[in-house]
Amino acid sequence: MASSYTSLLRLTKQGQGENANSWGTLLNTLIDLIDVSIAGMVSIATTGGTTTLTTANGSTDEARYAILKITGVLVSNSTIEVPASAKLYSVWNATTGSYTVTVKTSGGSGIAVTQGKVASLFCDG
Image 1 (cartoon, rainbow, N blue to C red):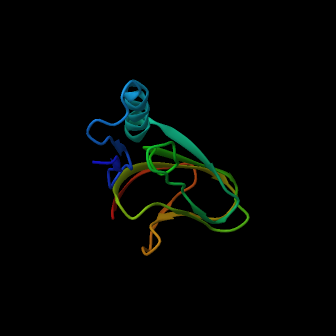
Image 2: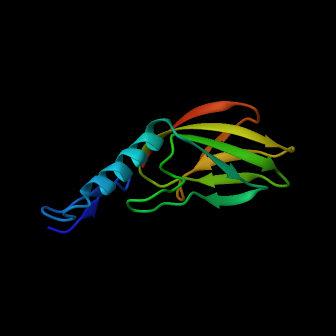
């Protein structure tokens, strides 16, 4: 069986018998990815428009983090697009400027997060 990835956090599921003598390195990467998905914070800089969070199977990406700190001087309304899969995010709107930050999936309407505030948002996929 070849390695595959979990559907929600994109974590590596090693295939039976794969990665002889290197499974420790892969396990440590997996633990680090779980760590940021539970308690890690990533800064997302924007000036407005749509910012789609990065996603990657088995390696670091923005969408896996538990806390999204949105920064920048907004010159237009900003949309932060998260993957359409179940996940809880804490979103900190640390932007300035007289515009809004909305967090949503590609097909959703989203939730606006007020400047200077932190909101817990649940994406139901």
